[in-house]
Length: 173
Ligand SMILES: [Mg+2]
Image (cartoon, rainbow, N blue to C red; front, side, top):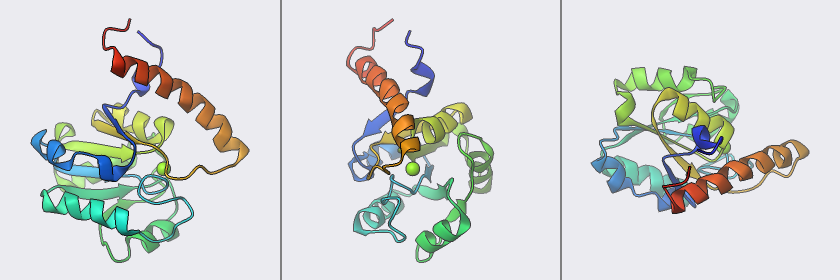
């Protein structure tokens, strides 16, 4: 078994709008915890765009609740959430479980009824995995070109490569 397996998401899509929301509903998901930066909009976009809003509407149309669990600060999350009015946790410090657990408790849902969508393996996905909820990985909308991110992405790529191999051949050992 790959040493990276603990970081594998349950599902992966290129972008949030590719996610099969009806399939999510059929699996019994009642609450989706959403990362904002590079998942719903680029890190540099303060407001939600058409794509993000249409995805949130799709969740509503399917009777799935959502909340933002962001590692970014209050100012960022408040501005993004201004016209949406969702519950949120900012400075969530994912992969720590505090924000994830807080939103699950607030919405009165079980682990089996909760999913998390994010673009980062070592914060979003690892946090979700540790919380025991279903995880969805999307490709980051826009790379932030700093040395730190380059370094981190390099290790994420190793996990993703290993995960893609696993997806192709579930019999990997
Ligand atoms: Mg992100």
